[in-house]
Length: 508
Image (cartoon, rainbow, N blue to C red):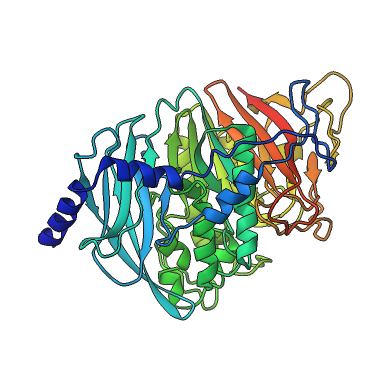
């Protein structure tokens, strides 16, 4: 093994710095410029006189989507200590000695080699071999070059780059990417185009991309994972993913796959979540005690504490969630409470798949068991998906907050409950209640008016158009700007334009 790593090291030291730079440049496709012209479809919400109208995007973004390639399914993932470490996952065609080779961009001769953990998983009818590694310690603000492969160098990916976060306590932003689940490659191309369009239009520097579940439609179909990772590489090879599991990755509770789910194979997320007892309450429940490794966890980033929660623990492996394992759900709730009690960040942000207050589904166990904990420990913002309809609401003690005024909302429906000069729906203190933001989809699947939970929300947007919220966190405020992609048809890869759907500020 040492001899094989030495061979790789010798090969790397003979490579020129120029070659590294050329490869890194060609893999960076997110800086596509926009051509700003007024579109004829769907004017965005007018937030202020400085906000632009809907814009059409240059063809360079489509060219970037078409050029995306990720043959080894490489992705970066958030670490429990994101300022010093980053997690990495990739795939090789065979079981091998996987390695990550990396060095500071400023010093190509300072080569480090990190050995990987092999994960062998059955996906459908095929066994795949994925590899997990953590690289670090990293210097804040330093850019690193890395590549993945096997120890003898016969399988090696292109060089890629990652910059460790610098002073996120001041300010950082992340994108909320809800349910990009697709059945085909064109759907994932549309997802990538949406992400790249919003990034170009907003000019936001994402610290990470946050998925709230359902990144694939069918967990057992390998092509969907391949497409997801190929088109998520529009950012995920240089910007980490934070994610939690959805019902489409989880599936039924029975079978050997419960011990090594496809989600576990393709993801490499923090493992500081709960450990359960035996799952004995439901029939044919084969979940192991460590089923939530990489699905429920927490981390601090800048001035915010983030908590990911696997809401499938409150279900029975079905969409309806008619039953659940009460003892282990109690363990999960206790873990969430202990984690929130120990947090000391300025803000607390929770993300999960099934939200407590949403338009399509009413998962009562999530609301009944988690909302009291959120309120007891002052959770500021809860991000969810599952609905495929965009909504925002603010609740406290089971009741929606009465707002009196808001910005203009030409798209969607606002229900403030009050009038006059009282609370402003677009700028309010977190002390009044917890904000629940539900993404519709960053892909092409929408529910429109077809699904109704009967739950009250303050704002809803049901058009079949992707919405990507960009959240900026400072010590003083959480600022959310939700961007929508105007489309002639939801399955179009290229939108007719991009604009601001809504903007709101949460203060202390």
